[in-house]
Image (tube, rainbow, N blue to C red):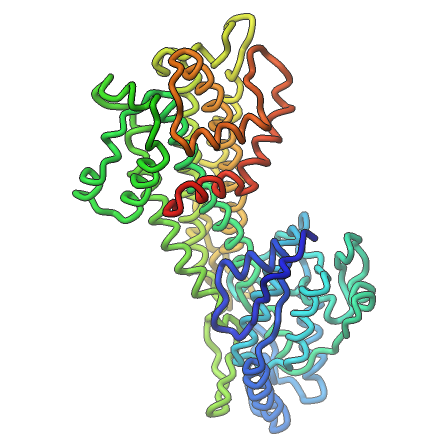
Length: 518
């Protein structure tokens, strides 16, 4: 686990969880507290479930089987076994396990959904989910197996196993039996009772956790893309008039205006750019259309965030228990379609960040397009290849992103003997969006490294200064990556630039210099 964020405690009440809260818990290990009002709501809904069992009222998943077995009546004496069998039979995942941050997100989101008090679960189980977060018990959850139909049944079943003293978990960096991890952490193990198995695994928390991390990384990539594009603007003697606000005002998409403002602020005060303005009529689209392309991506991110924000605080299991009138209603809130569509959109938007970044990188290394920079950014081309193959690598990831950006949500395959006859594939959409985000951050790193190399040539020749914020960024880059006057082991520098772009340090520098940057 990383360093605990001791300054932040996230209080779960089912209603107020934000993206910042989510990341604080999943990546910064902030502590989680269960709100008192949530305990009261859960206690009321639990009483409804216990009344149904006692009176032998027919209610899906409480006194009946699941899916196609919903017409099979379950005796009161078998109610607990039904719920435990559900977990055992549904833990059929395949593939590599999810990263720790994703599993932490699943635990957090599931606990928050249960806090709303419509699931009929004992609050003690939810308290234990919270304490698994606080004490660092992380179930081993395979990545493959969710259709996003009745939610993420398979991954959530694996997440639940340690609560039963089963499965596997990571504790203090060691993989061990789930029961042993719970014992070492001082946490109880449970036998599930009526409705509780469904309450724990019927939901969208796996795809939401994966998707929220992918969103956060894509938002970071979008901000970085503005920063790196502005450095490339200086390196390629870009024309700034395309970023004037009056240009954006006649096509007033909010994202477009935001990005244009970012570009103006980042480039302000550049003696190098001032010197070259009006030296050409217009730039290529990869420079001139940054507000339009990056801005459209920002619009897509706004939409995805609105969907995630709803899902963070939504009840997605089935059936729902309404304590006010003792009603139990079987609905479809577990269906992942809202997320599947949004996360496909996220992947497409993120792929476009990489697409246009690679085109700017091509202009930096291509002597016929770079306005006088040496071919492949090396002083002695021919003997040395310089940054030639950096563009190859970027192109390979951009091409891979195009395959990954094919939407998962247009697919469906029936399951459960055609009871679950339309599925969302939301978990697949989320995982693909995450892969695209990581490729995109790497592409941006390659553009950044090339832009810094190009700026060295410009400053050596003109003796003119960069913008103040670019000067700080340039100095930080040069702490990791030197000017490359001859061929060397490029592999030594690629991990350094990848780490720098993922660290959020560059956006932090910009926000110190430009408080309005967003």
